[in-house]
Length: 342
Ligand SMILES: Cc1cc2nc3c(=O)[nH]c(=O)nc-3n(C[C@H](O)[C@H](O)[C@H](O)COP(=O)(O)O)c2cc1C
Image 1: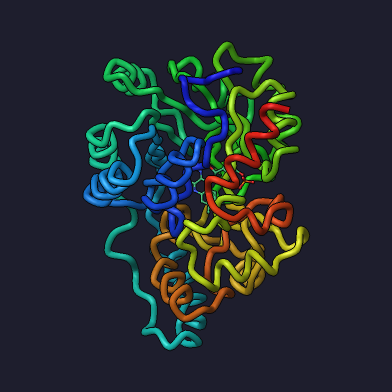
Image 2: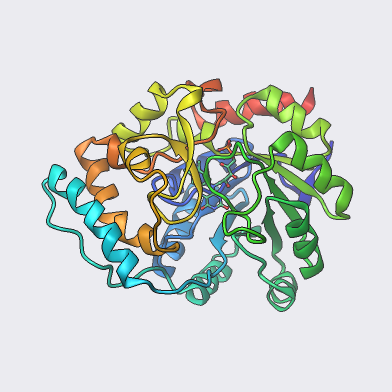
């Protein structure tokens, strides 16, 4: 059996936000998969605490994922227009009027330092190329380094930077587009088309992601030449995932056609279940990521508490309806693994 980096072939996608949970990552790794922590929105201190918490639950390896730093221009005028939109929903939720955020994102260098100190087996990146020097430094410290590509040119660039493997993130994938070349959104190529093109173009292993939710998807990924299969959305619904009840209910109710790509919550394309925010901001010009992401956070968090799915970023992929009752993380890993062996 193929064993990429001596790790199990079923990888849980790193998922920043509500699913960035030690209990979930540990349950996946303890259950025979490779759990990953989406640490993009965590402070360095939270990264350290969460990694320690994962270790308290399992001695199996896990990964940590960060977003590469984004170049963005502060645009207060556009931001104020966005805040005016948010104000209407804030009023509905009984929240005070939204304010310009005091802080837009975590300090990447400090996050990376905390990640290194946490000693995961794999450090992965999305939304950019960490570059030759950084990749070499991480590899010299014993980490496996993984990049994210949504098109072949990104895969080639990551390979030239020395990464150990590339995640091929197809159009079906839930959450943010992880690409970084061409349009700010990255390419929109389906997993079935993207994985074999990257396999052909690269000399390093390719990990398939996007739309894989059951054993059939895993078998397909392997048939396309992938060295491991990454599953995100299906893990959102396992017992150990601490999803807010409104988010969970929305995922259970959504149909295939409810899946949409939207900039509405963050300023950057991400796939989730359509709701009032995605519909009402459809086609509206927004300030660049991460400005809306920071500005909409208080609304999203309050809505999750209040049970108002219309104002939550309901990130999920196109295959959501395929596997809505996965049971425990270990049960889902076992079910997916059957596809790898098939
Ligand atoms: C809720 C959610 C959060 C995500 N957060 C991240 C993240 O922090 N970093 C990342 O590289 N990818 C992130 N992704 C994308 C996944 O890595 C992966 O590409 C995707 O989940 C695979 O498609 P699937 O959802 O159809 O399984 C996220 C996906 C979801 C659903």
